[in-house]
Length: 484
Image (tube, rainbow, N blue to C red; front, side, top):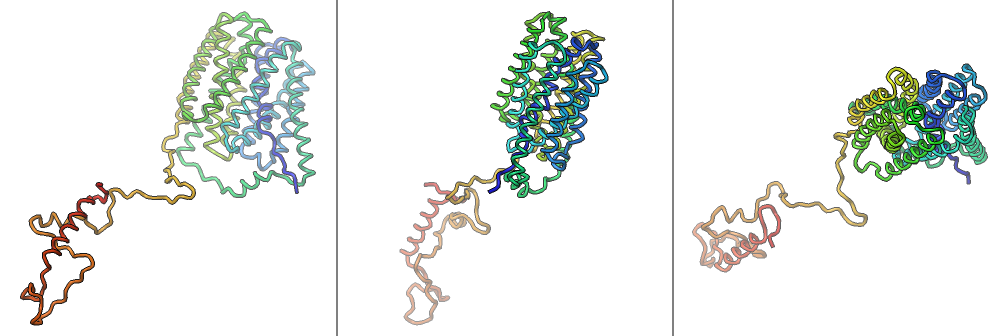
């Protein structure tokens, strides 16, 4: 019996591919302090890493299955580990630029494979929630450890390289075991792919919702990551927090993100996606304004905690919406890449706004951008006309019965129609079981015979017929339903 091949784990791949974006404040801060770069140069390098990741993810949208998920994931993890290892060794600007671009290519390929697998899962929303939970948990642990390992770029980039190489080693061992088993793909996945027909072409409403989602997500992501990229500088210079205090705040914020992910998994889609996306974005806008204008540790910490509590909840619904719009995974990859594109532009936009407008002005501009993006995202999440007609419920082992109240066969009339036609005369109804007498001209014919040969019915028969009709009228209505 052949052993089944295991597909690349989407939760672990998503966590590794998204770690550079989650660790962005530490990466930019280490480049500013340890490498001796200016804030604008450090922000540009962070944008280079994330822009390369978003570009590769967009190019790989819809092509992961053709290239091979396992091969693409291993290549991406190798590039991510190599780029981060190079960035940890030298502080020279050209080497850092090439290393971060290489790491971005690897992160984008890894994220594309993971997002495609998440969209093809049986429950995309809950699988995405688990992936976000793993990402937030790993980032929170690193935020607690990195302040104790030094302030230069060696510690955060070495940690990223080690995580990528660890997952790569796990995939290599799994691939070797699968090759010895002699089966190139999982049995259940193959069976589902063979039995499933080609996906239907999306309608005009679905295409409009997909376009609104993909075009708005970059601005939604850019506004948040612009503030996230300067959160370290903002907390240190304006809120007055030290390195250890900032690391603790960021770790608590990401632990709050774990609570948000847990809430997203428990809530699911019971109240739809429009309310969590729209209301969550509005509250995030208020948190951005509070964080940007914070002049003390309490306001800064409150804004960061509440913001990171809501961010994964809204993001999980956005990715779940993309997976629902296109089960093949193409829209999910495009949405994730669009979010990465906004994330890539975030550090450069944040540092530019902070230099020109200051931190309070930056918070106000980013809050306004979030408010503007809440409307299109809410409209994209609203599913009008998506209710399917429900079939009658069938219970196994019990025949399905249809209700016939209020229905009548065509051509029939109520049982009391002959009573209302001639209210003053007795109904002429046949006696059950009695034959109609044959007309005869015999001298010994019936004494009640008419001159034209017809035979009159006896009085007891007429009485019996009237009582039978009366009983039938008392137990039936014109609609056919019983009164007793």
